[in-house]
Image 1 (tube, rainbow, N blue to C red):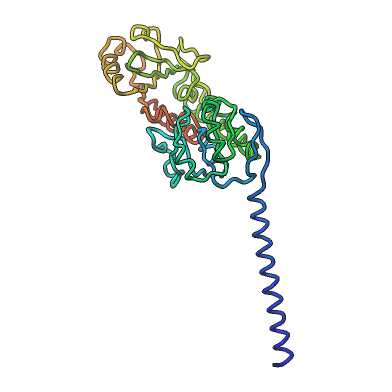
Image 2 (cartoon, helix red, strand yellow):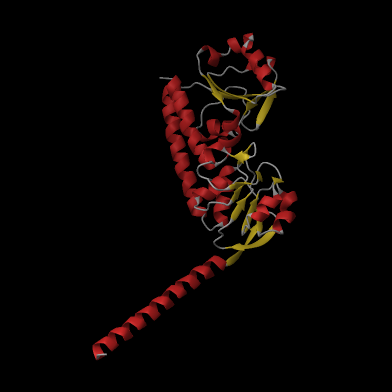
Length: 315
């Protein structure tokens, strides 16, 4: 073997050793990062959670926020009738539905089977905290579900990404302002109403859910008599006479409410309604009312859909 061949073999061995050491070092660094933890304060005290969690079970209704921040959960409670909400099914493909975020309703066995490294709850779910904290590090969000902007920021803070959450909200509000301007150019000073048909009565919604999008995000003028400081007001059929909207959004809760809605449509009160006379009535599905209206991805879709509906009818 010539000296040239010996040197070639020697340098090759050195290169292989260095490459192996480098790869091992990178793997160790990655593993160390994944294993790093931090202490966070939450509604039930403090919790030690992974800096970079990989298997998040979200029971708090924050799966949309997590997706926007780049953290796809392995389990979610963003459900409707025990299935992942329609507008999220593609984005949450492969994710397990394990509860419903508006209540302390959870499939503990399913959560355990997912082997989470972080569980997130909201402040409506305090009674199941102890059970879940035995499975994995668990945090409870302090912000009420209705305050979606603050909730988004709280979720962002949990992952040291509050600025990213805030910027998304800023962009959303800019988009909403632009759509609001387009709508008002067509509807002028006309007012809007959001009405729900229930089996017992009628509800005139203020700044809550779908109403929050209409009156707060899009800043559309509410029909006289709408209390924007309240979630909603319960009204009888006769009581609807006091409301004369130019534009009206309606959700029918279904079931026994179908008969209530039918009677309303056959009444003189319906026929005398200004929005009805002008064909400015927009029906909202029960599913959309209960899903899209409360969290950022759904809201971002809805402001587009609402604007299109209004603009199409007010050409």
